[in-house]
Image (tube, rainbow, N blue to C red; front, top):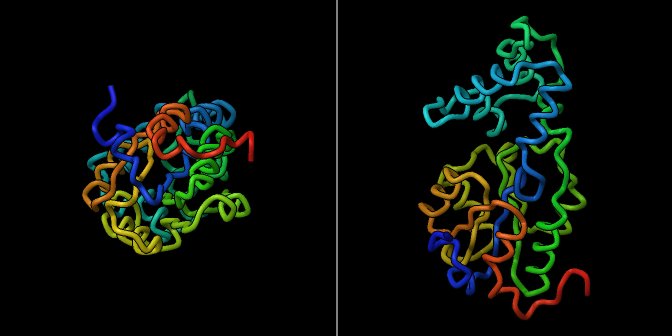
Length: 226
């Protein structure tokens, strides 16, 4: 059952929609990570443990992931720290590698979500991107086509769910927070967005997110007709 902030009527008057990238514009990250741990011969539990410690509810604001996403730690430095934490299925240390790139290698653009973005734009709704990332793997040509503004955490020195990054994105849109809907697949980020005054939609897949915007889209042409 949809929560009130996901009801199509609550998005009907939106003037802009901000989208997360990983797991929203792309296919789910968990599938890519599963492929990576298998191909790189990494014990998935060793990765889960470090992910919980670095990104979980009790993670330090200065954890390596937080620092990476704020642009305070390079990808190379992050890989060095991550390598120390990972183990092979037999419990042995893993060799150095570009694990950061590897874990996202199997992630693909979700064409269903991209079609939704295009349809929103055709309906006169502005679309922006707000992503916790260092941005190395993004197709900037696609982003420039689909989004304005593009806010990448590593480029602005702040990250979701900090209120200030939502404030920045809304400022770049030139709109009031209540005129903006934020779409993300992580509930903690939606909590941060609502604290900043934005409306939110929890992304599960392209079809359910499209349904949340049906009133905005009812007069828009379909992607197939564009």
